[in-house]
Amino acid sequence: MPVLQLIAKIIKILRSQGTPGQVSAGFAFGMCLGLIPWNTLHSFLIWIIVIILNVNFGAVFLGIALFGSVAYIFDPFLHSLGYKILVEFDFLRPTWVSLYQAPVVPFTRFYNTVVMGSTVISILLFVPVYLSSKWLVKNYREKVDPHIQKLPIIKVVKASKIYQLYEKIKSLSEL
Image (cartoon, rainbow, N blue to C red):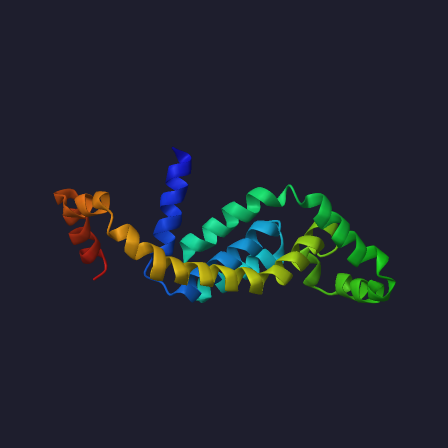
């Protein structure tokens, strides 16, 4: 049953009133929040950006759920990437020392290898995730959803009195 609920929530997000850009931006920010550990300053800053920008919150939570559930699998890779950036690239050492001595920057926990690796990966993946999810949302809305709306079961559900009542309540809540 949880799988069906997840599929229903994904379809609801894909059919939401937001533009494809809003949905995909929410998913991309959710990807960042899912990969980066929660107790960092920059995850807090991402939440502020999500609240300020007009993005789809359902897509944010979907991105957190999907990428947060697989982030633990990639922790060894994220650790090794962060270790390379923090320790093995000697030319960056003065930068890390000065950042660590700055007043607020240590709250980002950039000195943690997993945090550094996940931050770098989330920055690198942000644009590809945004563009691919935007393409997915557009194609779903243009090509798949019209066919789904023509299915007999959907027509039966939309003809029911319960669905009509739901639509009335939904239209009243949008006022």
